[in-house]
Length: 383
Image (tube, rainbow, N blue to C red):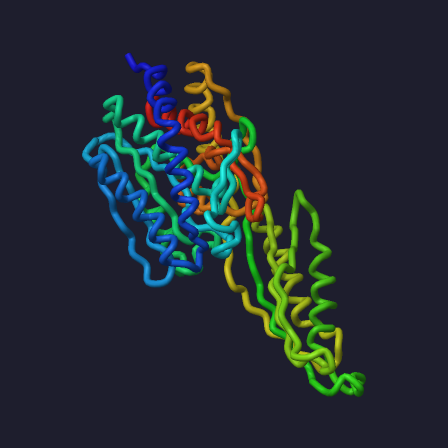
């Protein structure tokens, strides 16, 4: 007879130790482009896991951080459960001061405390507690992704391909992105980014009528693209722009990046067609534009196997006096989309609670660490 109460007691007893782990890994600043920082976080997890006698595999990368795959009970013949989260962040080193992390009675503040280091710490806590009560029913993997925030472009998609390959035999894949209330993400928008590179004709500003402003051309194109603003459908954000050399010169060059988010292939095809039309259209005579699709992330479409997995988890949670989870959509991208495309049953966003992600005010709720660990541990214990 399985004793879930005992498992919860062990998780609670480890809370103080793993809050320190949470602080430690977030004090190791690891923006995606900083391979040394990302690898340092991976080594921290690897060393703790090796002390537990678990199997550790490093998927080395020349540019991005290395992926780390940690497995307990690797010799069990049952189907594994795979847990995943990313250890890279968006915050430049130094954004949060020194030290990067601070605490008060209720919250932890710092780079990646919620997105997504808190979730990876909750997964490690769940696995540690399972090990302490002698759980050996099936393998449990924890895969630490190293360039998720950049859509895996630093590894040329090798890291997400590795994750899907390692997880392909899993009975369940739980992605430990941040949670929101008693919900789980079962569908997400896809993302495509396009770079517009515009060339004009430069001349002194006193004779600007004789020039062709690349910045003015970019402005027209941006305003056209920003018409996509349907939160339930296609959206467009032009979030990066660069151009010009001096205030008294007509700018010869300007480039900007447009990010499109969409629910379906039909929406993407419609947006892609319009983007190409805008790139080809000339608003300022004498300018030219080249268009490059720079990166893309798959959408996480609604699928029956994911809803069936959530139903199975909710039955486990209800039987053990835990809150059940309501399915919802997220407008952001995630590795769970690629996992779903590969046919692996997947539940997303069951990590720690918090808010203000991707900002200097990012915070996590301290009490949510053990709550997330219990959700994760229950899934591993009872499935």
